Amino acid sequence: MTATATTGSGQNDRLIIAAASAGTIFEWYDFYLYGSLAAFITGHFFSGVNETTGFILALMAFAAGFAVRPFGAIIFGRLGDLWGRKNTFLVTMLLMGLSTFAVGLLPDYGQIGLAAPVALVLMRLVQGLALGGEYGGAATYVAEHAPEGRRGFYTSWIQTTATLGLFLSLIVIILVRTRLGEEAFKAWGWRIPFLVSSLLLGVSLWIRLKLNESPVFQRMVDEGTTSKQPLRDAFADPKNLKQVALALVGLTAGQAVVWYTGQFYALFFLEKTLKVDGLMTNGLVAVALLIGTPFFVIFGWLSDKIGRKPIILAGCLLAALTYFPIFKGLTEAANPALAAAVTRAPVTVIADPAECSFQFDPVGKKTFASSCDIAKTALATAGVSYANQAAPAGTIARVRIGSTELAGLDGLSLSGPDLTAQRKAWGKTLGASLAQAGYPAKADPARIDKPRVVGLLFLLVLYVTMVYGPVAAALVEMFPARVRYTSMSLPYHVGNGWFGGFLPTTAFAMVAATGNIYYGLWYPILVAAVTVVIGGLFVREMKGAPMD
Image 1: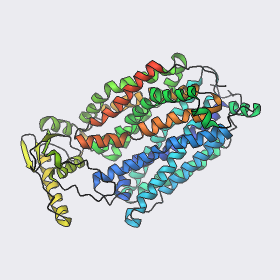
Image 2: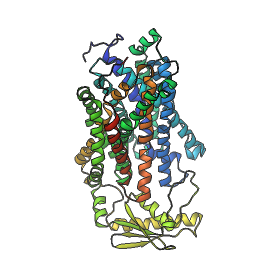
Image 3: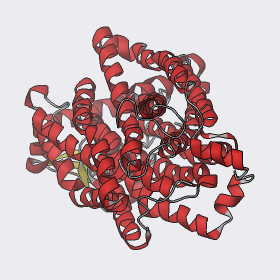
């Protein structure tokens, strides 16, 4: 692609790709700020519940934005097929920018109580709806400009935007945290990255306003062949509906879980489970993203040569086969003291199973005061992996750390301040016992094998680039032009919004329920494996399909 290359619309190719990509980078920046700052948001908006429940609620608020993405895909996909690609993604960008700016201004729980998390979730829902309409528009717009034989390469630049948006959000967070210091950042500085989005919104809108409409859509308008009822034409046609289903199960579901495991779950795992300092975690992830991002374009270019499907399914297969050793390697490299302690002094909770609750309380009213619940809450908060062993009915729970045992605290007969005080005292006793057995309260920065951590994170990002680099071209080529925006947006956002977006919450809950810090990996592994089978058997390679 040369500097003077133009498409059928008469616009410079680089302007088209840059304009579509710039806006999408901005929208992903907005969306991922929340995920990167979930720990801070927990303290400000969910302070009325215990720490474990608060973090799960914060992750659920993060997931809420993903939950509505398919609805955004339907709403804005329909508009995109009715009145154009360009106009639609201008609207989605404006919605995303305003809702993100508003998050930076919201009063917290201490100021307005339950209204604070409600307002936060509302802003997340607006963000999710907007993002549901953004991606399909940008991918379709670029693909409909791309010359024959270069569609994978052109759309792969769009695919870099999600990672670049995350990378940009991490850089802004790092700069603000280092400039203000941890205390000021925790108190109010976390709002600054959200407020900065207003500047990015202005720049992105200015760039996109320079674009013309897609030549494919404009030709359909001129010929009167646009769809008058895109939803009916997309989903009432059995043949097209079958393609939608195959695109979801055979491509985007596996792509989504690989994407979110490699970028978001890895970040959560390092900071929340391995207790690596948040600033260092962001830095390590940012370096891996910087190294890995060019591979989106490399695999997009390669898909023009050998096809989209082989690369996407190979990425899913490699991820499913190697996630367990990679994440165990992260533990050994990022927190070797924790890895050694787990081997030397494994922890077991010995309790009556009837006393052990699934500790999730959306309204923060339950106390979880049984001896089993108190023990598991303390261990989960400390990031300690543990096994479960059944005890006779009515037995007070015990925590075995290596060869020593600690009696649990039965809080069912306690209430109010007494329960809080004794729970805190027992937690300190547990912490001292864990420390004596070699369990670190935090990862020691001096002992982190940074090159190895970055290498493992890069491997996760490489899988992401394999599944994500070619997927835009694959989806665009599966559907006819008159319902393309609607048809491709829905499977993409069901896959990425539901299968991928709920991954951090689902995996965290699985870990909390079992005590195994790696147990949550079964979720992406199984979904990726299903995509390999269904995609391999039933999805047709569509490389080079005509855009008209």
